[in-house]
Each structure stands twice: as C-alpha cells, then as structure tokens.
Amino acid sequence: MTDPEQLTLQGRRLLDRRGFLGTAGLSATGLALASLLDGDGLLANDGEPIRPRIDPNNPYASRKAHFDAPAKQVLVIYCPGAVSHVDTFDYKPALTKLDGQKPPGIPEVTFEGPTGNIAKPFWEFRPRGKCGKMVSDLLPHLGEHVDDLCFLHAMTTQTSAHPQGENFMNTGMTMEGFPSFGAWVTYALGTECQDLPAFVAINDPRGLARSGKNNFGSGFLPAAFQGTDFNAKNPPNNLARPASLSAAGDRGTIDLLRRLNANHLEKYPGDANLAGRIASYELAGRMQTSVPDVMDLSGETAATLKAYGVEGGSELRGQYAKNCILARRLIEKGVRVVQLFNGSDPAGGNGITNWDSHSNILETHAMQAEIMDQPTAALLADMKQRGLLEQTLVVWATEFGRMPFLQANGTGRDHNPDAFTCFLAGAGVKKGISYGESDEFGFKVASHPTTVHDFNATLLHLMGLDHQRLTFYYNGLERRLTVVHGHVVNDVLG
Image (cartoon, rainbow, N blue to C red):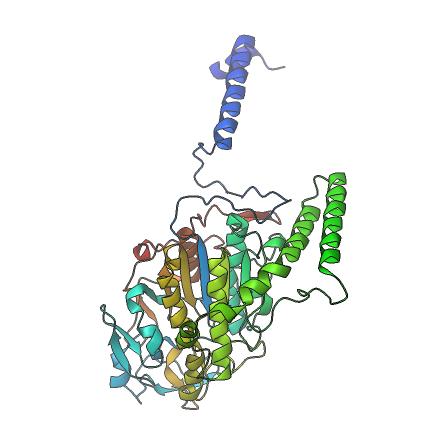
C-alpha cells in the first residue's frame, strides 16, 4: 500500500471522503446538465458528429437542417461523358490564336493516347445576358440564363476515368459502394412529401449512366435513402392494379397488410430494419396513385410543351424534354432530391449516347447539345417563373472536362481532370458570376481551385448541412460525403 506521505497534494485530496463525494456529486450534476442541454440542442459541440434522429417507422419524415438555409430541395442535372468546358462555358481566346500549333508544355500522351495540336473552340463564343458572360453557340438557350447562373471554372477531380469520375462526383469516392449525394441529403433531411420518394433519379431515355445505380445508391446508409429511378417513358414497375382485382379488393388487401405489419412490428419493437422495410412497402402502396399523377403531362399547356422542345426536334430531345417537365413536377410536389441525367451507356458511348467525344467532337457534342440545351434552359425558366428557384438549389455537373488540344486522330478531345466547369443556380447562390479560372488554354487551374470535395461541401452547406458533422458510423469510422476533405466555397454564396 502506498504511504499517504508519498502522495502529491492532489493525490491526498482524492483520499479525503468529503472531497471525493463533493467532486463526484458535481461531476454527476455536470453530466446531467450536459445531457439536458444536448437534448434541447443548446450544447456547444462544434466538430462533434450530427447524426439525424430517424424514426424507423417513418424514415422519410422531414427533419431539421443543421442551420437555416434558403435551399430546401435540390435538382442535380448530371451530364455523363465529360462536357468540353473549352467549347461551352470557359472562353479561351488563346486557343484561337494558337490553333494548329503545339506549344511547349503539352504532354505527348494523355488518357487515350498521343496528343495532337491546340484546337480552337468548335463553336463561336458570344457575350450573353447583362453580365456579358461568354458562352458558345453550342448552347444558345442556356446562354440566355447566364444572369441567373454561378459558374465554377476551376473544378478539379482525382481521376480521368469515367466510372471512377462519376463515382467521385456523385459519392465523394472513386470506388463503388459509397452513399450518393442524394442519399446523404435525404438521410439528413427526410422529405416534405410523404406520397413520393424522397430522392428520385430520372435516368436518360437511353438508359443508365456508366456507373449505373451507384450514382444514386445508398451505399452503407439505410436502403430507404437510395434514389428511386424512373423517367417519363418508364414508370416504376407494378404500379397498375391488375384488371382481375377490384378497387375495393385492392383497398381491403392494403388495409389487411397494414394490420398484419403493425402486429408483426409490435413483436419486434426495436427492429429498425423491419420498420424500414414496412415503411418502404407502404410508400410503394401510396406511389400507386401519386406516381401516375405526377407523370401525367396531359395537363401541361401547349406553350409549356413547346418551350421545353417536346416536339420539333429529335426523338431523344422530346423524351429528355419530358424528363425535364417530370423533374419540375417532382420539385413542385416537394420531393427533396431530384437527379436528372443527360447521357447514358454503361459500356461507353464515345459521344453517341453521352458527351464522351474522343472523335468527331463537332458532330457528337452537337448531337448531345441538341438534346440537352433547350429543355434544360426551359426547365430553369419554368422553375424561375413558378418561384421554385427561391427554395431549390439547381446543380449542373459533369465528371471532368476535355483537353484544349486534339487527340492524334485530329477530331476529338481527350479527358481533362485538371480543369473543368460546373454551374449552380437558385436558392442561396450568387447570380451572374464566374468563380475561379483555368489557365489561358483551359488546361490547368490558374486560380481558386475547387475540388469535388469543396463542391460537395458547398452543396451540403446550401442545404443547411455541415459537411464535417453530417456522419454515419460504419465499419469503425465516422463516414461523411467529403471524407476528411473539403471547404465551403463561400464566395459563391448569395
């Protein structure tokens, strides 16, 4: 036994019974007070994880954001294949000056092989809007909206491969199996609309993008938060009631299932997975009436259909235009996250089914722009006219850019992960500005680089979510969309 005389003064105090009881009492009181403050949301705990409190019986219930923010919903317009920034939104006069030359510093080989010479933009750039933003003639309809857009011209990414690039942009990781941006948002916030999915992915008329359902998957988050994918042409399966079943019989079956599920859940009150499955099936039942209603475009005016370009262009443009109208209708109904795809093909489209123009970019980019430009511009105009942009964040993105020089074939541009362009619009975003710059060729970032993690951190912030504290404990780690990276780009916040 240690001699008390050998202990420090603090050690001897710990042996004092009155001192021990007093310290223990104060500690217990402090813990109780901390618990009460935390329960009321009054405890300062900067840096501590914030995990939403989810009712397993209603995982889609609306939940409060971490802080007040103007954006309550988000529409992501995603263009697989890598849109060429130097032929659309990032004006580089030096390309015209050096057209056909190969100045020092250009690599001999890039992602798909030997490089060619500098190529000027394949379409003329012109000043648009009151802000005078230079946009090419490839996207004249979107060019009309530059005064409402916020361009990020110094985007960078970690990969030059499409599957990994799509994964990185949409999940924050190049590998598969991680939650998508939409899943993180619905996990955190739920939805205001209880008759439709919290997160809808509207796939391109031609099919899924390169990374498929991983772009809107839930990863290790509960399956309830994955995107439900359908489009204007292909509704979810099994919505229609079989002709052999009467409406009364259908309602009776649903009521019976509800009672049986409730009784079963009472036997396992702590089983969150069971409760989540029941909630998903009940939502599916409600979707039998809500989805046909939201997909019914017959009530849209002739002027609206014309503005979106449903008729008068290619069949693909008409189908994508209907998808754009569906996206607006879902936002109107209160769906939290809508992800609209413009481009497809898991096997690689080489500019035919997406924006991946390694050859004949003049023809292939023009084909994709004919599909995307007018309907997307009409969607922005329609949402603005209806007041939807006041609470909806709109994101236009692609996985990386394209090179300012041609490939050796002389007709296409290779992948460029070191500089590309995305834009934002709507709630919480500055209007008519450009943030960051690429170099004089559009080859590398020159100022204010924005990583994909920065981009996602900013999107979450605009939705009222702290990207550093929105976490999910998985496999021994506090996981988050931005991993351990990312900074909010405050200069683009309105």
